[in-house]
Image 1: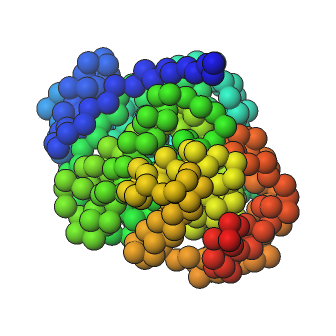
Image 2 (image 1 turned 120 degrees about the vertical axis):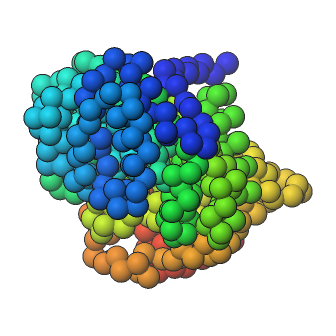
Length: 390
């Protein structure tokens, strides 16, 4: 029997308009002055207005830290920590995509723990609980609103995860209204990020009944709703995508990820490619490479994506790869890193950093340096991902 463990202390509030009750949430946490961590794009879109009004209505003061960077680095999170202290805050509200939420989590670590942020990389290195943290995602891909992970980019452009139950937020507020202004290309890329989370959590070597259930439902919802959500931005499908993203975040919190993430983090760190886009490009290549390692789980993923029953599990799994290729194409995601302007000379460094990831060890197929090199080169040139199985 395979043992599994589930610990998710976050409370999730899902519903249209739920973000307008943020003031009462912080009031219940006994907070008096909140640091809002976000980026200038969120502020310019007006998404904060109802939340700041709610805070004011609950007599809670706030200060806005809006200098979040894509793939936040050490300086960014240190700056956020100093802002928290200078403004004499006692709680944190993260509003935005994965970068804002990661910044808020990492800054929270520094507020209550005295060592440099990179000393907490790895698993369970944090000693003290963070200040009260509430997360409000404005994309449908990060899942970070419910996870035990934050990622900080070091001075060598390597994205290092910090994993601890202390990082899990107190409350996650999921308001589909906040996705209405999300551009189609960001719905597409963040949605593919969520799909990658779900597929990797389902298919890796860590089996968890709860994580698998969340992953399968996330895949089903994404297969049904990502195309219309990106195409026309209707609130029903955006809401399903937001829900799916959180389910996928829960799935990888308890089951972790795999080779796609091990390889995509170096692509983002070295070449500046957005995380969701890097995942989307790599996903069909890694799926194709991995099929022989866990055809049963990949067949389940294919079925959840809407693939009709096939003559056997491997056939179904192959159709799942084809469906992901088609989904990328229909969403307008480039099929190669070359098309995204990535310099092929970066590949050796990206290979080296891939093997620094703990996700390599739990990938469903054993991976060598030459395997990773082949996947990178195929994904650089845009060769068919099906070359691994045909």
